[in-house]
Length: 113
Image 1 (tube, rainbow, N blue to C red):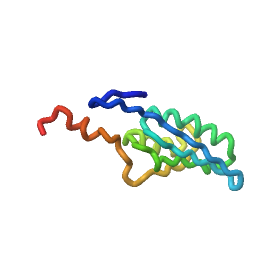
Image 2: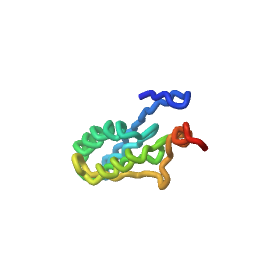
Image 3: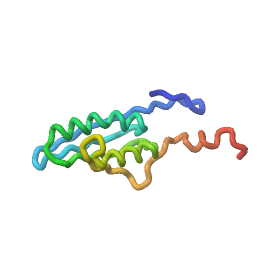
Image 4: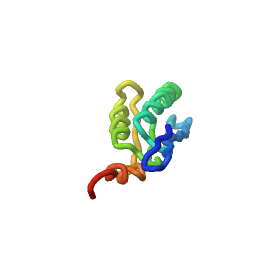
């Protein structure tokens, strides 16, 4: 989805790489780009498919290399990781999630600062 904000076109693309190991059975889903709520919804079918392919709970969604992570998306993803509505999985996230580079400008836009 392209978004025009503060004179800049922003492309919220999500890149996903799925890595599988046979012994022990495990799947790692590496996420790059921008993780938004719609991106989390796009990840769910991949997590479900991974759960059907391997026999076991070793599914990891690694978002530590994402360009930016929306806070609501991170909260939603960690909620879904409990297994509600899909296979349970582990989320690897950075301690401090990277935010959209123009977020501060957007919040201060039009303020009397």
